[in-house]
Structures are given as C-alpha cells and as structure tokens.
Image 1 (cartoon, one colour):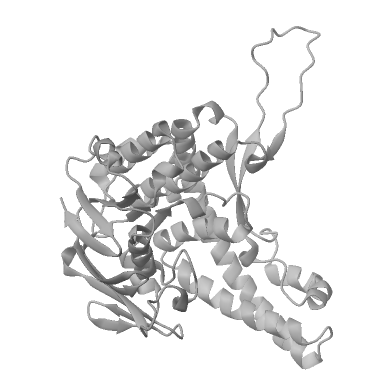
Image 2 (cartoon, rainbow, N blue to C red):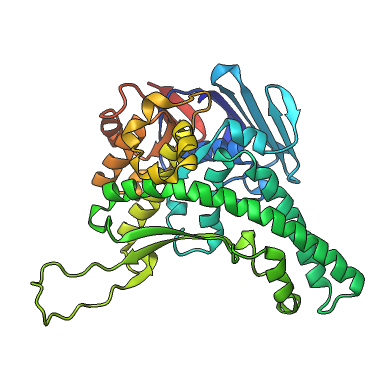
Length: 408
C-alpha cells in the first residue's frame, strides 16, 4: 500500500506530496490535476502513462524530467524518473534496478477509467494486456518467457521486412529463432491458460452482480494466437511465404486474445409442445449485442473480477492442482486467507461519469471488502457521502491547478 507519494513536474503537478490511506478521494474541477495524480501512480507501477506513451507529452514544459516516488508499507520505497528522451531511471529501496518489473511487482495497479471503456471494440492488444497483467503477478516464470519471446519476435520481423526471399543462411537463422519462439510460446500459453481458467469463475460472479439478467448468457474464452496443439515453429514454417510477403509474423503468443461471448437463451415463457419449433441458440460477440451502458458494466466486471483472483493466491495454488474445485471459491471467502505484504492499488477516474448508481454501489461495496487501496476522483463532493457507506475512514484531497488545497 502507498503510504506517501511525491510527484514532481508531471503535467500541472509541480511538487506534490501526500500521505495516503486505504481509501483516497480527490475532488476537483476538470483540468485541476486529478487524473494526473492517478497517472503518476500508474507510471510508477507500469513504467508508462495510460494517456500518452511519449514522456515529452506528460513532462512539464521546460523541465528535463518527471519523478514519482512512493513509500510503501513495510518501509519499502520505489521511484521512477522519466526524461524527455525516454531515458528511465528506476529505484527500489534506494537501489537502482534495470527492469520495470521490479517496481510492478511491488505496486500492482488496476485502472478503471473512461478511456478503458472501449476495450471490447478495440484490437486484441488491450484485452491481451488485461490477461497478461494477471499472469505477470501470479506466475513468476511468465515475465522472463514473455521478454525472451518479444526479443526473438522483433528479430524475426526485422528479417522478414528485409526481403521477400531469404538466403540459406537467413533461413537457418530464422529456423533457430522459430524454435526458440515455439519453446517460449508453449510456456507462455501454459501460464496464460492456467490463470485464465482460474479467472473465469470470478468473472462469472462479477457478471452475476453487475449484469444479472445476462448471467447465463455471457462467457469468457481464451485464444492462444496459434494452434496450441502443434509446435509453433512448425506452423511458422508452413506460413513463411505469406509472412515474407507481409513482412511480419501473423501467428503466435503476440496474437493471443480473450473474448466475451453472448449466447441467446431459449424463450422459456412459451409453453412447450410436441409441435413447438425450437429456435437455434445464437452465439455472438457480446460487443455486438449489448448496449453502451451494458458494455461499460461488462468491462467493469472484467477488471473487478481480477482483484479477488490476485488476492487469493493461497487458494489458487490448490486450484491449479485441482481445477475441478475452482468454482467453489467465492469472493466472500477471501479476506482472512491473504498475504498482505503487497497491496493492489485500484485507480478509479471519474467513475460516476461511466456507471449508474446501482453499478457504482456494487463496485464500491466489493472493493471495500477486499484488502486493496483505492484512489478515486470526482468533480464534486457528492460522492463522499456515498463512499462513506463502505469505508469507515477515507482521506479527501481537494485539488486546484495541481495543488492540494486541503485534506480532511
């Protein structure tokens, strides 16, 4: 959990310092710096902004760098500095580290904001990242496999772009890379599949709460990005001529995706007779069926269902050994069985603009039951009374032009 946070030279946050609690509310007008505060926490955790990938877009004008520093529970400290040329300096407990994953492990962040509400209609990258965020935090061996796979993929694509035909030396080199890609892809798929199977019952519970009328019609599926029953290098060899024409690798772990499917229910209101015509069950992408408001609830369910899974690692070790028992794990059973050394941080940006009162009620009541830290923003103070129903104590920050005016 973040105990203290310091941010310098990020957008309109010049030199901001705050002492945080389990539930933190930032009140302010548009452009006051509320979202920038969440952006700073996200940058510290992920090494990138959720608004712009180029540091020069969020570093203050006429400043060479932005720095975010946090003191976590158990006196741990983490810090990141991003310079205009994208040079990054990372520190963990005052020591320089060279991979963002070292900080990400210490500070898991989950973002729910208006910019994430188009995930179902966007390409596969955002949905794949949703799964990989979970896998990263739950399977220690995943990250190294993913990094090695990405390195080989970059080399392969670079070679494919050079020419539509390759020399024998280049073909031998490509064959070696493909073998490496296949080995990494097999392990990446193994990790993803295990975590995905554990995630599905939690997703079903969230859907039952947020979209109860669709509880029996929505389902989650995972696509590996290639035929997982065959070695990836064999499939890459079969598609080599097409890959050379296009200049990139079309299948593999980098093409994995998750989908939410909608399945029609039989009309149970009609009497069943011998002559009754049974309509076929229709299966469709949920994004093509649900309304805009329903899709917001669905995406909230996707993200919200990840928290109890992440927090329930001890139970999951049993699940992975016996998958048949995974449906028996309930969100209600989590609290007393957790290792609380690392606390997830949930960032809710102007959430009242995206969710109605009922959905917000379910979201906040669920979060309040879980050992996570929450930072949420709002335009008005009306939300405070609503939040106080679920947290016995919350810290309220008033933001104006990048400055914290008061704390209650």
